[in-house]
Length: 265
Length: 283
Image (cartoon, rainbow over all chains, first blue to last red; front, side, top):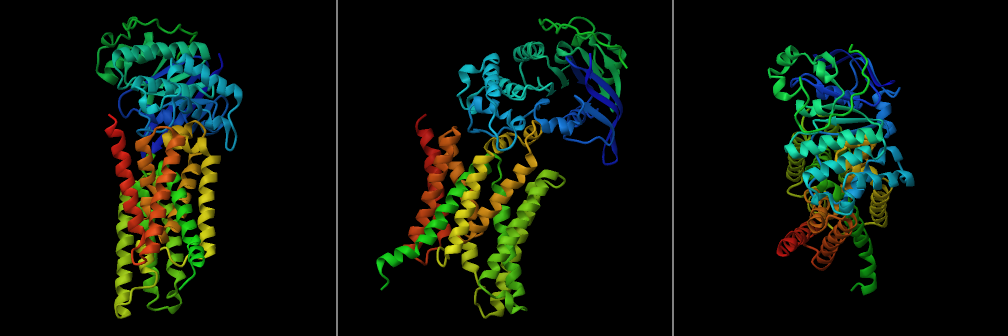
């Protein structure tokens, strides 16, 4: 399977402080990569580099053959769900308008969205269970409904890569389960490649085909089941079995069907 | 006594300026409130006082600066430079924008008042040229060119908001999210800053440098209390701003000793209180 994302010899430093060093990581098209690691390990920095918000100090990142900045400017390569989007209270637009705004970058300045794209927005509203709420102001949506609307917004331009930053933070266990089911189903339906960063190891293991452990350098990159317990103890000081990584995850979820994964680096 | 029709004609310019500025301010105020930029407007508006203060101090040594139009030109330059400075700070981080604006705001006011006091002392108590107008606003002496400039700024705001509707909304929801989805956030950011600065520059002579921010906050704040539909919010905001501005024109026309700025602000505050109260009565 061709790589959608290719990261080679990536270094990144905030002034003198090296945050990422020598990262080599390929993400084949169609898989979900979960990035885990301790606080300050560089997970969020890696996401910001992937989305073109930061530039590498050294090395390179390629997304569908483009630099992240070029991919971002296309408006149809990267879909992004931030951890806590700072949506102003009582923002005066409807759910449908919010999802349509996901097309703004793809459509371009001074142009109207294509009929085909608007039709896809309606499909997404239906798929996310938001069709009946489409004309409601977003201020009336619950937290879960708003998150689904934001996922629909991220998917509206039909991106190849969906980037999720701590997507299950602040959601109760039922909501987390529904979210994971939704993402797994959407990935299959839309043939998405997903990169997600999370502290929630259960969520990561339930959604990911491959896991990358990041703590300044890349410590591990393989399928979740092969994750060495010693590494997890080292990085998180926690019991692997307690978080369900050594055996099938106890979330009552069907795991995403494993894809053929090349040997780890 | 001046014929009635002539008196009416002379008030076409002030009315046109007031209406144009209230519409431009009302449209921008929706975005200012949503993005919590009220303090940004304060920073830009008050910087004009610092610009005028510089001219009043220079006028003590260089008579060229002691002309009616020069302090206003200084206000224009100060507001545009401050908007650019604040815009860069907000995008680059480092010092928090609020902190920088707070420092800049008090420094501008202090410098402006210092200039006014030193000038008055040197001129035996005479206030510097433009003092009353730039601080509290005045509806008199608007030329046809000034009215045209106000209408042009208003049209620029309307056209930009219509043309870049989706980009501005995406930016206002979350600038970072907009940037990742391919929206040119930087362009939208500086364009909004420029429109704010231009509206403040023209609005300063109506509402005064101290109170001009009211045009850029209160109409949107009132409208957002009454609706969550963008079209309605914009319409209510424009009507709210227009009522405030026209009240200022009428009162200043009838009682010329009353400056327009405080009347506009008090009318807008009253409208906001009504808008804030109405939905709560319905519960």
